[in-house]
Image (cartoon, rainbow, N blue to C red; front, side):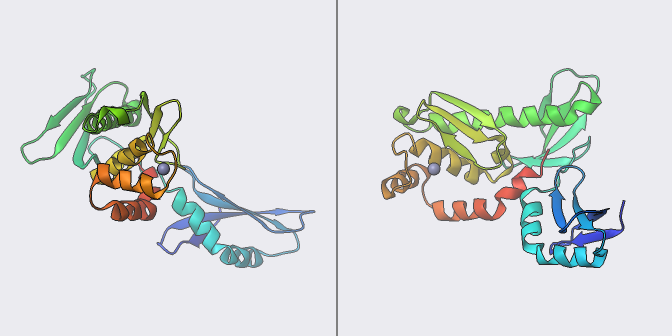
Length: 235
Ligand SMILES: [Zn+2]
Protein backbone atom coordinates (compact mmCIF):
# COMPACT_ATOMS: atom_id res chain seq x y z
CA UNK A 1 0.00 0.00 0.00
CA UNK A 2 1.30 3.43 -0.82
CA UNK A 3 1.22 6.43 1.48
CA UNK A 4 0.13 8.73 -1.29
CA UNK A 5 -3.44 9.90 -1.22
CA UNK A 6 -5.75 11.84 -3.45
CA UNK A 7 -7.96 14.06 -1.31
CA UNK A 8 -11.26 14.95 -2.94
CA UNK A 9 -12.98 18.31 -2.52
CA UNK A 10 -15.44 16.57 -0.14
CA UNK A 11 -12.56 15.36 2.03
CA UNK A 12 -12.41 11.71 1.06
CA UNK A 13 -8.89 10.27 1.09
CA UNK A 14 -8.37 7.89 -1.80
CA UNK A 15 -5.17 5.82 -1.82
CA UNK A 16 -2.94 6.18 -4.85
CA UNK A 17 -0.87 3.21 -5.95
CA UNK A 18 1.99 4.08 -8.26
CA UNK A 19 3.69 1.41 -10.33
CA UNK A 20 6.90 2.13 -12.22
CA UNK A 21 7.14 0.47 -15.62
CA UNK A 22 10.12 0.37 -17.87
CA UNK A 23 9.30 1.02 -21.48
CA UNK A 24 6.18 3.00 -20.63
CA UNK A 25 6.01 6.36 -22.40
CA UNK A 26 3.23 8.16 -20.59
CA UNK A 27 1.73 8.33 -17.15
CA UNK A 28 -1.60 6.52 -17.05
CA UNK A 29 -4.29 6.99 -14.39
CA UNK A 30 -7.00 4.44 -13.62
CA UNK A 31 -9.55 5.17 -10.90
CA UNK A 32 -11.05 2.05 -9.30
CA UNK A 33 -14.45 1.92 -7.65
CA UNK A 34 -16.00 -0.83 -5.56
CA UNK A 35 -15.08 -1.81 -2.03
CA UNK A 36 -11.41 -1.08 -2.55
CA UNK A 37 -11.49 2.44 -3.92
CA UNK A 38 -8.15 3.63 -5.14
CA UNK A 39 -6.30 5.13 -8.06
CA UNK A 40 -3.81 3.05 -10.03
CA UNK A 41 -1.06 5.00 -11.72
CA UNK A 42 1.60 3.61 -14.01
CA UNK A 43 4.51 5.89 -14.68
CA UNK A 44 7.63 5.62 -16.82
CA UNK A 45 10.83 4.79 -15.05
CA UNK A 46 12.33 8.19 -15.86
CA UNK A 47 9.49 10.26 -14.43
CA UNK A 48 8.82 10.82 -10.72
CA UNK A 49 5.97 10.28 -8.27
CA UNK A 50 5.69 14.04 -8.01
CA UNK A 51 5.19 14.29 -11.75
CA UNK A 52 2.56 11.56 -11.56
CA UNK A 53 0.71 13.41 -8.80
CA UNK A 54 0.90 16.63 -10.76
CA UNK A 55 -0.82 14.81 -13.59
CA UNK A 56 -3.45 13.53 -11.14
CA UNK A 57 -4.07 17.11 -10.07
CA UNK A 58 -4.65 18.11 -13.69
CA UNK A 59 -7.24 15.33 -13.92
CA UNK A 60 -8.94 16.29 -10.65
CA UNK A 61 -12.30 17.18 -12.16
CA UNK A 62 -12.53 13.93 -14.09
CA UNK A 63 -11.43 11.86 -11.05
CA UNK A 64 -13.88 13.59 -8.74
CA UNK A 65 -16.70 13.01 -11.18
CA UNK A 66 -15.73 9.35 -11.39
CA UNK A 67 -15.72 8.83 -7.61
CA UNK A 68 -18.86 10.87 -7.10
CA UNK A 69 -20.72 8.69 -9.57
CA UNK A 70 -19.44 5.53 -7.90
CA UNK A 71 -19.95 6.28 -4.23
CA UNK A 72 -18.48 3.98 -1.65
CA UNK A 73 -20.91 1.28 -0.64
CA UNK A 74 -22.13 1.56 2.92
CA UNK A 75 -22.23 -1.85 4.48
CA UNK A 76 -25.03 -2.86 6.73
CA UNK A 77 -24.78 -4.76 9.98
CA UNK A 78 -27.18 -5.68 12.73
CA UNK A 79 -28.24 -2.61 14.70
CA UNK A 80 -27.78 -0.14 11.84
CA UNK A 81 -30.48 2.26 10.75
CA UNK A 82 -31.44 2.48 7.11
CA UNK A 83 -33.92 4.82 5.43
CA UNK A 84 -36.12 3.71 2.58
CA UNK A 85 -39.53 4.72 1.25
CA UNK A 86 -39.56 7.59 3.76
CA UNK A 87 -39.26 5.16 6.67
CA UNK A 88 -36.48 4.95 9.27
CA UNK A 89 -35.75 1.30 9.83
CA UNK A 90 -33.43 -0.41 12.29
CA UNK A 91 -32.13 -3.74 11.05
CA UNK A 92 -31.72 -6.44 13.69
CA UNK A 93 -30.30 -9.87 13.01
CA UNK A 94 -32.08 -12.71 14.76
CA UNK A 95 -30.70 -16.12 13.88
CA UNK A 96 -33.72 -17.90 15.37
CA UNK A 97 -36.26 -16.64 12.82
CA UNK A 98 -36.79 -17.86 9.28
CA UNK A 99 -38.97 -15.18 7.71
CA UNK A 100 -38.32 -11.44 8.00
CA UNK A 101 -40.36 -9.52 10.53
CA UNK A 102 -41.18 -5.88 9.87
CA UNK A 103 -42.47 -4.10 12.96
CA UNK A 104 -43.70 -0.53 13.48
CA UNK A 105 -42.59 0.70 16.90
CA UNK A 106 -44.49 3.14 19.15
CA UNK A 107 -42.05 5.94 18.32
CA UNK A 108 -42.83 5.82 14.59
CA UNK A 109 -39.64 3.96 13.70
CA UNK A 110 -39.57 0.51 12.22
CA UNK A 111 -37.55 -2.56 13.03
CA UNK A 112 -36.75 -5.15 10.43
CA UNK A 113 -35.75 -8.49 11.93
CA UNK A 114 -33.86 -10.71 9.56
CA UNK A 115 -32.82 -14.29 10.15
CA UNK A 116 -30.97 -16.91 8.18
CA UNK A 117 -27.25 -16.92 7.55
CA UNK A 118 -25.61 -13.92 9.22
CA UNK A 119 -23.49 -13.30 6.11
CA UNK A 120 -26.66 -12.84 4.09
CA UNK A 121 -28.04 -9.85 6.04
CA UNK A 122 -27.39 -7.42 3.23
CA UNK A 123 -28.98 -9.49 0.50
CA UNK A 124 -32.01 -10.25 2.67
CA UNK A 125 -32.48 -6.56 3.43
CA UNK A 126 -32.00 -5.74 -0.24
CA UNK A 127 -34.68 -8.25 -1.23
CA UNK A 128 -37.01 -6.93 1.43
CA UNK A 129 -36.60 -3.34 0.23
CA UNK A 130 -37.18 -4.42 -3.38
CA UNK A 131 -40.41 -6.17 -2.43
CA UNK A 132 -41.61 -3.11 -0.49
CA UNK A 133 -40.78 -0.81 -3.38
CA UNK A 134 -42.59 -3.03 -5.85
CA UNK A 135 -45.68 -2.94 -3.61
CA UNK A 136 -45.55 0.86 -3.49
CA UNK A 137 -45.09 1.18 -7.25
CA UNK A 138 -48.07 -1.11 -7.85
CA UNK A 139 -50.14 0.95 -5.40
CA UNK A 140 -49.26 4.14 -7.25
CA UNK A 141 -50.11 2.58 -10.58
CA UNK A 142 -53.49 1.39 -9.31
CA UNK A 143 -54.23 5.05 -8.57
CA UNK A 144 -54.07 6.12 -12.23
CA UNK A 145 -56.51 5.22 -15.04
CA UNK A 146 -56.18 1.73 -16.45
CA UNK A 147 -55.10 2.82 -19.92
CA UNK A 148 -51.76 3.90 -18.41
CA UNK A 149 -51.02 0.54 -16.82
CA UNK A 150 -47.95 -1.36 -17.99
CA UNK A 151 -48.15 -5.05 -18.84
CA UNK A 152 -45.26 -5.91 -16.58
CA UNK A 153 -43.12 -4.14 -13.98
CA UNK A 154 -39.58 -5.10 -13.07
CA UNK A 155 -36.86 -3.72 -10.85
CA UNK A 156 -33.29 -3.34 -11.98
CA UNK A 157 -29.98 -2.10 -10.63
CA UNK A 158 -28.95 0.20 -13.43
CA UNK A 159 -26.72 3.18 -12.89
CA UNK A 160 -27.81 5.00 -16.01
CA UNK A 161 -31.59 5.24 -15.75
CA UNK A 162 -34.19 5.45 -13.01
CA UNK A 163 -36.94 4.06 -15.13
CA UNK A 164 -37.75 2.94 -18.62
CA UNK A 165 -40.77 1.95 -20.61
CA UNK A 166 -40.58 -0.44 -23.53
CA UNK A 167 -42.91 -0.60 -26.50
CA UNK A 168 -43.87 -4.13 -25.43
CA UNK A 169 -45.37 -2.72 -22.25
CA UNK A 170 -42.67 -3.60 -19.71
CA UNK A 171 -41.79 -0.87 -17.27
CA UNK A 172 -38.50 -1.04 -15.41
CA UNK A 173 -37.44 0.91 -12.36
CA UNK A 174 -34.20 1.16 -10.47
CA UNK A 175 -34.73 -0.50 -7.07
CA UNK A 176 -32.55 2.28 -5.62
CA UNK A 177 -35.47 4.65 -5.93
CA UNK A 178 -36.47 3.16 -2.58
CA UNK A 179 -33.73 5.33 -1.03
CA UNK A 180 -35.02 8.53 -2.62
CA UNK A 181 -37.71 10.70 -1.04
CA UNK A 182 -41.10 9.13 -1.71
CA UNK A 183 -42.18 11.91 -4.07
CA UNK A 184 -39.06 11.46 -6.18
CA UNK A 185 -39.90 7.78 -6.60
CA UNK A 186 -43.50 8.74 -7.37
CA UNK A 187 -42.28 11.21 -9.98
CA UNK A 188 -40.26 8.52 -11.79
CA UNK A 189 -43.31 6.24 -11.82
CA UNK A 190 -45.55 8.99 -13.24
CA UNK A 191 -42.87 9.86 -15.77
CA UNK A 192 -42.78 6.29 -17.09
CA UNK A 193 -46.56 5.96 -17.05
CA UNK A 194 -46.75 9.10 -19.17
CA UNK A 195 -44.57 7.37 -21.75
CA UNK A 196 -47.40 4.91 -22.34
CA UNK A 197 -49.17 7.79 -24.11
CA UNK A 198 -46.13 9.71 -25.38
CA UNK A 199 -42.94 7.85 -26.24
CA UNK A 200 -40.99 11.12 -26.47
CA UNK A 201 -40.23 14.08 -24.21
CA UNK A 202 -42.46 16.51 -26.09
CA UNK A 203 -44.41 19.34 -24.40
CA UNK A 204 -47.47 17.04 -24.55
CA UNK A 205 -45.51 14.42 -22.63
CA UNK A 206 -44.54 16.89 -19.88
CA UNK A 207 -48.12 18.10 -19.66
CA UNK A 208 -49.11 14.47 -19.07
CA UNK A 209 -46.46 14.08 -16.33
CA UNK A 210 -47.74 17.20 -14.60
CA UNK A 211 -51.31 15.94 -14.89
CA UNK A 212 -50.38 12.65 -13.18
CA UNK A 213 -47.79 13.91 -10.69
CA UNK A 214 -49.16 17.31 -9.78
CA UNK A 215 -47.19 20.36 -8.73
CA UNK A 216 -43.40 20.26 -8.35
CA UNK A 217 -42.10 18.26 -11.32
CA UNK A 218 -39.15 20.61 -11.86
CA UNK A 219 -38.12 20.52 -8.23
CA UNK A 220 -38.16 16.73 -8.22
CA UNK A 221 -36.15 16.49 -11.43
CA UNK A 222 -33.63 18.86 -9.90
CA UNK A 223 -33.36 16.71 -6.78
CA UNK A 224 -32.62 13.62 -8.89
CA UNK A 225 -29.94 15.33 -10.93
CA UNK A 226 -28.25 16.64 -7.77
CA UNK A 227 -28.61 13.59 -5.53
CA UNK A 228 -29.24 10.63 -7.81
CA UNK A 229 -25.68 9.28 -7.65
CA UNK A 230 -25.89 9.05 -3.86
CA UNK A 231 -28.68 6.51 -4.10
CA UNK A 232 -26.08 3.99 -5.27
CA UNK A 233 -24.10 4.05 -2.06
CA UNK A 234 -26.51 1.84 -0.15
CA UNK A 235 -26.14 -1.93 -0.05
ZN1 LIG B 1 -38.61 9.73 -20.22
